[in-house]
View 1 (tube, rainbow, N blue to C red):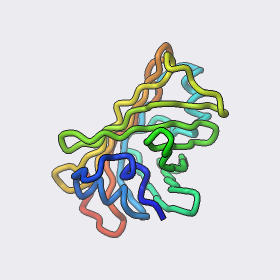
View 2: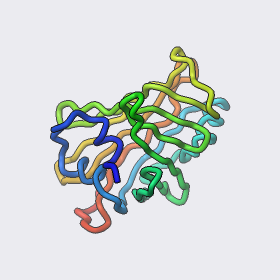
View 3: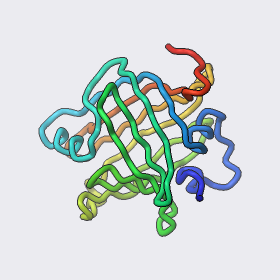
Length: 182
């Protein structure tokens, strides 16, 4: 079976931190805490609902399950009881990661620099219809390892005209190797 799509999309020999490499290398369960901030407005709310994104919350318990099957990798995120699931594959045509959230498909390009993995949005389709480049969401998503060895994430997206869509940020540790809370 092929490795994690993010690892496939990075240049060979990329030196990721232990926490980032572990999360992108194995099927596992992770737990942690995060803050979720959803953008405002009815169109943003509709977009977030279509992609099954979580509601606002401070210090939310988050659990992430990463499994793979013959069709790819499945990430199930449980934000305090709200489930957001996606399927990830490596797209050879565009040399990037394709992530499917219900009717929303996003093509992502990971870039590694200064001990951080950032993720750029290259393309988006809703119900199979491509989003015009002019309206393509922008992401400032970053993953890294903190001083305690935890996987840290800061996932955000904004859309021209609509403004901020969502931001969720926090930390995770493997359920088989917890390194402490806080």
